[in-house]
Image (cartoon, rainbow, N blue to C red):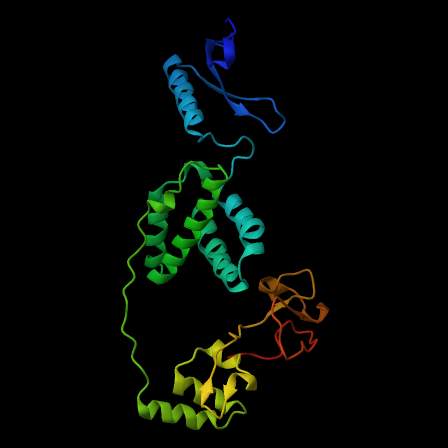
Length: 284
């Protein structure tokens, strides 16, 4: 074999009997040529792979060298290191459920660069067949589409296959409001609670739970009869006091747990320091 000039690709048969192809596709972070190697017993196969690498080089679509991600590995990396620092806690929680409850158990062992739209579509069908709502499958679809979009931007994969996959159709249902009699029964029951006003305001104005819970006296103008929605109260998150995850406490003695503390959510109600790993109050 003679060395090709100007970094041109080479195809040759080695002493091992295999055909080898070497293609320079760019420059590494260290400033050295990024040389890729392919091999096969067939010269035509190696030739085709060399031409494919050359085409990707010309189009700027050569995958980065290094780790070959599985779907599970990339989703965990994306969730914790890319998404979590930049999104709201509620969005992170929704992504976490989609990733760890549905996507990783259903697709985690696939190589990221070998994932196909059909794999996603079969997952959605299985989810619905097992009792999940189409809206849940849609959330999973949006999550994997976002995660793969980031993989494309970082040249970990060439194409976002989730944009090709067909998500299940969501059937919209017309909302049926409470009747006057039902509203009356709710308000009658609410009078027994210290926060009865919350239910009266919510039913009168159609406010969401978080909007009602976030109201302050400064949001109300009694003179002009105006109420402003300025805060959306979300359910607080608590950091577990010991090294064991809350979801794995079935075999762990709760008495060994340190006091809990609230994270990511300011609250006028301080954490109680109870040792049973549960919030001391509820927004429901």
